[in-house]
Image (tube, rainbow, N blue to C red):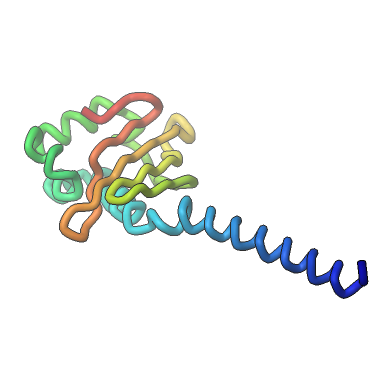
Length: 138
């Protein structure tokens, strides 16, 4: 095999590897970005104890069963969520109108794991489920 053919083969292989890696990055990191922004907004409202705004960032199914006061009580039952300083999402996946995000909250107890499921409705993303350190937000 000639040197040029070998270089072309290696170049094609590297290009394929970059394309696969880029596709993975787009599906797991970039694609759920609007969902991640919705989750970050919800968590910012929780930090500010702005319960009406936080409730508006939840899905219609969650809002049917909760009002702002019950959301405040639910958050209070998860101390790491109630007292977190920031949230970082490190992994995400997207399937049609559902996104799953994983990360951690910086809390007084240290970093604690968080998982958020978001749903898209009418062009917007809403928090549908949230689990902090294995404890679901009721």
